[in-house]
Structures are given as structure tokens and as C-alpha cells.
Amino acid sequence: MAEDESQVLSEIRDGIAWITLNRPEKRNALSEPMQERLNTLLWEADEDNRVHAVVLRAAGPDFCSGYDLQKYDQPVPGQVDNRRGRAKFDDDSWHQEKAQRLRMVLFDMHKPVIAQVHGRCLAGGTDLALLCDMVICSEDALFGFPPARSQGSLPSHMWLYLTGPQWAKRLLLTGDSIRGDDAARLGLALKAVPADELDSEVGHLAARLALIDPDLLSANKRIVNLGLELMGARTLQRMAAEMDARGHLAASRTRFNETVRTEGLKEAVRQRDEPFGDSVVRL
Image: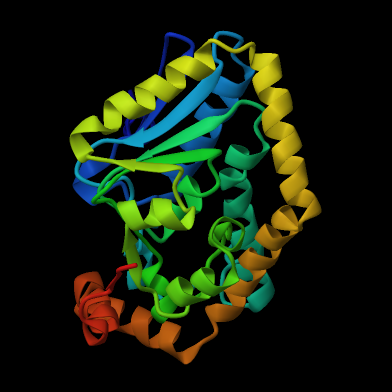
């Protein structure tokens, strides 16, 4: 198995496609090949008649720490071989929209997807989890989008629909995080359970979905998601990708990237987050 393929694994068992982010040494940070592999596996599961539903989970201590930021140690690329770079606003927006289309499979595919979240679910991790149909998490999981403090805005955006406008602003305007048990109270997650019960809780729900005809699961998922579309959810995702490109023009983003290049990613993140101290919001 090629390295890119091994970073996202899939198996079909008892009517469920179990798809696992498998880059634990990088806390499942999402590289571009990883996102492409995930997109492929989700569409394959959606087409497979054996599959009633999908569980998206992760190996290692965290669900997903965000997007792979190692590319920021290089200058922002211009046009190469007549292909878009990222230096211009429209080029950056184009790349954001391209990446978003890979994630939107979670919203667009017919079969339901349960996100099984443990550990950190930050930045790009929330872009994945919150596009799933249901999120079940451990009580000590951590949800947040710290890059909103300096690097841009959210390239996918379901927070408004799940928490309402005030809590969406409270969390995103500060980049603060929230524990799994409080995330469930706000609606970011369907349910939070003790960490040692997470596997069984998700397995129980998945088994119940496996009892239902996939065509009926699809019909009921799609009517809810079409309702979200009528409330603007899908249009907002497109706007979010473009707004992130706008956010990339902020001076703080330039400083972050320069710190990554000169002092390393760890130091850039430290400088971003240290002034905020304890960043966990408690209800």
C-alpha cells in the first residue's frame, strides 16, 4: 500500500464503512493527498450497495489537529507552468474552493456519516467533523479553530447552523476551544460520552443505521440537507472559502507565515496562542 493510501484506511463491516484517518504521528493533520484519498473512499462507500452508513474516525490520540501547515515554510508561490499559484486573491480563492469540494462529499453523499471524535478536533478537523451528519465525541474531546486568531477565517462553516450566531461568534472571533461535553450542550455534537465508551456508543448507533434500507437513509438525510440548503448552508460554504482567501491578506497571516519560515511552525503557533492563556471556554 502506498504511503498516501495508508494515511486513510477503509473497511466494510456489518453494513458500515469504517473510514480511519491514519496519520497519528502528525496528529492526523490533513495533507492534500490525504484529503483526496478521503474523498475517494467516501464516494466509494456511497456507491457500494453493502454500505448503509459510514463512520469517520481516527487513529492515535487525536481526531485531527487541522490542516498540514508545513507548506508555510515556503514563500507563497506564484504562477508555475501556466498553473495557478496562490499569490493573487482569485488564485487563493480558487484553491480554497477546490479543497472545499473534496470535503463537501460528507454533505453531498447520499449515505449518512457519523463522526467519531476524540482528542483534539481543531481547525481542519472541525471542517470535516461538522460536515458529517452526526457527531459523537468523548467528553474530553476539544473542538476549536485557533487559526482564526491570525491565519484566516474558516474555509468551511457549519458552526452557525449548529450553535446559532452568538456562540459561533464567541468561539470563532477568539479562536477559543470547547470541550466535548460542552460541545454537545451547544449542538456541535449530538452526544458526548466518557472516552472509554466512545467506541461502543458509535457502534450502537451505526448498528441501528445498518438495520435501515440504504435508500430510506438516503431519502431522510437528503431532505434534511436540502432544508439546510434552503437556509443557505451550501451557499455559505462557498462564501466561506472565498472569505478565507480574503483573510489570508491580513497582516497577521503574513507575520505567521514569516515566523514559520524563520523560526518554525511550533514557534509560530506558540506566538499565536500564548497571549490567550487557557483557551477552553466553559459553559
